[in-house]
Each structure stands twice: as structure tokens, then as C-alpha cells.
Length: 638
Image (cartoon, rainbow, N blue to C red; front, side, top):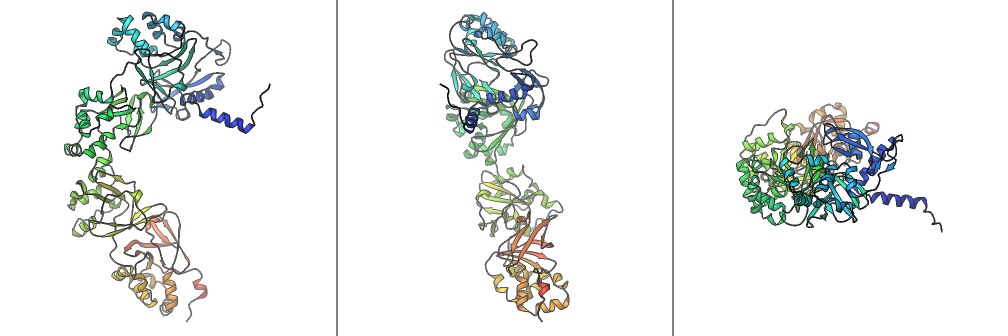
């Protein structure tokens, strides 16, 4: 009986689900097959690292970048696993003949493993009936062993070599789809575990040895070729820390932070273990402070622990990994060297443990959460600001245990001149230090912040910016042990009075103040509110024809209308203006505010001075009196 065919849509869905179910290794292999199909059936594209014998099936990113660990590769085309060439025919049309594991070892490039199987009397077992999987070291893997290690194995072939080979074997058929990330397989040597990691980039490792050729079927099992001779692992990460002489300082730090139980618990972690040398590179005062602070010390150590096991062979490009401390590290490679945050600081890699892997690092990775504000600033573009705070005698607020948030202008602010630190500047700097340790993601529009200078600052949330008074946050905040660093784009101007107070105190606006009084708007601009005022200077009024100015000043209703056209009932600081902003004036018409060449324009007129802050708004000085659309058409009545 014929089965009914699937409708096309259901067939596509079924195929899609089948593709989605493929393991990362199979997906990469499929990509290599697609790239190689023009050379005939069952041909795979392989990338070889120039100057080495290291080869990789190619994923999409590698294919276009033509690089592994930043080094150039060449593309070659080889038979996909399980196939071979036929003389006179294109590609690799023939499946490899199926034979037992012993004979398959010779076919797939692991003749040395085959030889040692013969010497150790393993051959009868892997030629006979049964179902086995063998992770067979390549010929190069055996050759890379030290002469001492190889001699100790081969000189006692009936015991040590046999045990070593049986540790590479599993008593069942295991294909790459069965090699799940983070699982273990019981080997045929005393059931000791073999650690499996199957990474998203398609690389599979066995005790951190990379699978080179996988899924070669045999009549009695499967052969996978790997790039190292693996050895048994019985020690936890904690045991490695306890027994390694170069980790003496780390050992004391782990004990002080009570992380021993974690490092000996079940799981799969990566410990980036700082050596004694790494600790010695840190200024003694800073190191003593961290070692004496349990919370900072725990953050420091957790910043060196990745949430999953990451073998060096799995890293062929940069990737971001999360630490137990909650932040991320950029793990990458440059040629043969592993890198952390772009620096080749890993001294020894792939020390395997029962619960993960250890890489020794010769520099300490200090997270922001363990740093003071001054230490945070060393890695930010605010060094000029920090010099000012230091000269003003405010260092104690930025190095102690006081919970504060520092608003630090970036160096660009001081490119033209560096301010003199006097009593006024010291008071201003005190208002750049906010009481309490804040995080920018929890700030909200209209929030009030108290400074150490006893000023109240307002938070403004805009579509493309987050500002505190006139200063907008120029970079993501850095949260330290006790303080948070906000890099801001200008010196803060704390408000000193209402809009009317500010206008009255500035001689440039005497004509405007008189006009506001004549129009009856003074009380309005003195009350609490959120005003933006584009304030015409005296020169702006003088630039008007005298007759028109006289008529305007003599007509309270028209004067009020013109003045309201210069005002809006919301606060718009310059940092809010990226694209065109249309602001509804209190007169009713729209004001068009834009930014050109770092200068604010309102209705295409440049603003002479922006961000003059008041307790109930912000003032922008303009050099012309703005006219509502159509005003000159209707004129001003006599």
C-alpha cells in the first residue's frame, strides 16, 4: 500500500525540523559538503591553517573570513568522512569498505594506534565481535608525546599501553550526534570517565582533544580520530589549585573566600587560574585591599571562573563568555595562543579536571565590581577629571567605602582649557558626586539626586540619551565596589534659581525680563515647572526694526504671544537633540530644534549659549527674536 505524500508545506516543515535537530558538528559538516559539491559527490571543503597540518571543516563565518585564530587558511577539497575516490571518476563516489575497527584505524590515518593495538594485544578484541567506539589518536598525536612518556607506555606494552588504549574506548557505538556537550562517557579502562564537549561552532572535544575525523563506521563499532593522546583525569579543579606550586597565592585567596566547595563540586567550569606572578603584578596597596575585602575577593575570583568548560581547541575565533561574577570575558585566540580580552596572557592551557578545565593566566583579571572609583577611571577617558578631583582634595570620597556615584566629564571636555581648582571649582566638583551608588538602567525621568555639595539634580530620559541636568551620560556606567562611574559629556551646571531668577541675574536678558513683566508672565516662570526657554538676548531685540519693537512692547497681548512662542512646557537640554525635535511652544505653534556642527538651532537660528539650568527649567540664549509662522502677514495692530 502506497503511503500518502505529505503536503508541500508540511514537507518543508518536516525538513526544517530535521535540519534543526542536527548537531553543530553535523551542521558544519553539511556546510563543508555544500561548499565542496562543485568538485563532485561527497567532497568536503576543508580549511588548513597555513604552515601547520591543522585542518577544519568550514563554517559560514570561517569560509568568508578565511581565517582560524586570526591566521590565514587555504581551502582544500577532500573526501567527506566515509567516502573515497574512484580512479577516473569525479569526486568521492564510493563509500569506504566496511571492516572491523582494527582495519579501519589504518584507513582513517591512525596507523600508529593500529600498531600499538597489535603490540598491546588489543587487536583480537577490536577485530572480533562486539560494539565499540574508539577515540583514536592521530599519528601526529602519538609523535608529539615526549620520548619519556612514550617510552613508559611502549616499554610495558601488556599493561600501560593496553590500559591507555582502553581508556580511549567506550563499550558501545557512539556517533557525533550522541556526543552531547558537558556529558561523560565511561571508558573501558576501569569505567573512568571521558569528558565530552560539543561546542556551537561544531568542534567536538574528548578530554580537550579535538575530533579530526569523526563517525567512521566499522563492522563492530565507530572510529573517531582525535588530535591528542588523552590521559585519565581523577582530580577536581580544587585539587589542582591545592597541589600546584605556582598557584600558592590563588590557593590562599580561594580558602579566604570559601570557594573550595565550588571548585571541588560536580559541574563543568573553566578556571582561569592566576599564577603567583599574576598577583605580584598588581600594586600591593590594591591587592591588599581586595584580599582584605571578602566581597571584592569573591567577585575577583568568580571573574576568573567561566560557567562552562572551554577547551582551547574549541576556540577558533573570538567569543564572549559569562563568568560566575556575572560579567563577560572575550575569549579568543591568536595563532597558537589563547587570548583574554584581546591579550595573550594564558601561560598554560587545558589542564583537565573532573569538573572542568584549568588554564593558567599570568595576569590578574580584576572586575569592575572589585575596584574603587579611581581604579575604574584608569580604564576610562576621564583621567583629566580625576586629576581635578584629586587636586580638590576629594580623593577620600572616591577610594573609600562611601557609596557614591561619580559624574566624571570625559577628557574631550577639557581639550581647550583645564579649569583652575579653587574653592568654587571644589564646590562644583562636590556636585559631581551623587550620594548613593546608582545604576543608569534604574534611573527614571524626573528623578531627583542629592549631591555631596547639597544640590538636587534632575534626571532626564530622552529617546537617545540619558542626562543629569545638562550633562548626558557618554558611556555605559562602570559599577565598582562602592562607587559607580558615569562618564558624562560636559561639566555639570547645577541649577541656581528659577527661570526668572536666572534671567534677572544675567545682564544679557534685561530687555527680555522687562518684556516678560509687561506681558504678565513673570509669575508663571517663577512657579515650579518644566520649562524650556529660548531666551532672546538684548542684541536680539535691538536687531528688530525700532518701529516694530515699539509696537510689540506696547501690545501686551501680542507680546505675550511672541514670548510664549519662545517657551515650552517641558525640559529639553542640548544632549536630547540628535535628530530634529519638534517642540510644542506655549503659544501653540511648533518649534523645530536641531543640531548642526555641535550647535543647537531653533527654527534654523543658531543658539548662542545652551543649557543654562534653572530649578524649574532650562534656558537657551538666542541672538534673534523668533517669529511664529504668518505673524508678519497679519501684522501687529496699532
